[in-house]
Length: 201
Image 1 (tube, rainbow, N blue to C red):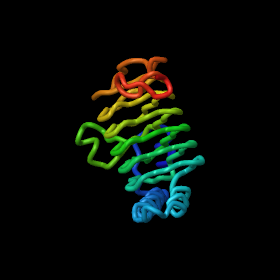
Image 2 (tube, helix red, strand yellow):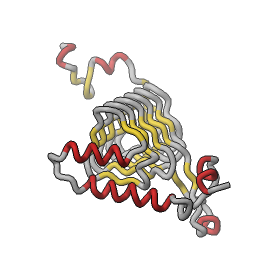
Image 3 (cartoon, rainbow, N blue to C red):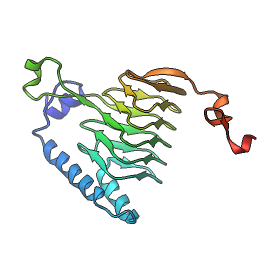
Image 4 (cartoon, rainbow, N blue to C red):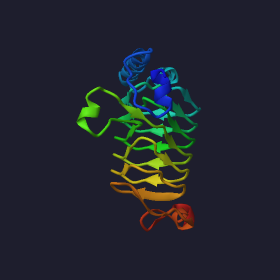
């Protein structure tokens, strides 16, 4: 098997051959250029992101700085917003649905290493895709680990470490991240604790 085939099959692989190093370097150079744009260079930022990501829908905005391993393994839906310091360890696929909100200092990592030091010293890594559904909000400082799927319309609380799949339509938080409660019609009444939306008063 090639290293790319091993990666796709969930086996240990290295990224030092088959053009993967060059692909990663290309993405890091584009991210470097993106991070050095001026705040008012909107069109330039969008052009760079369209070159960087594997695919990107309309009306997407990313605040610098942005960190990637490849960039080309990231696929983004429509109406995406990411605040500053998003880190995407995208040695394999990261997929975002539509209307996703990402708060500052979020890390999404598809890769890991063997736990035992003798198995780790050869540099092998594994990678499992991460999928973020539509209408998801990932709050500040969250970390999402390999193989995780977050269901549509869910919220991941600040500082969470997401190690397992999160179902749709829930508020989940903690380390490890767990479901706190479902998101219900009551959440259409209040925007923060017991503060009501103006149009419901």
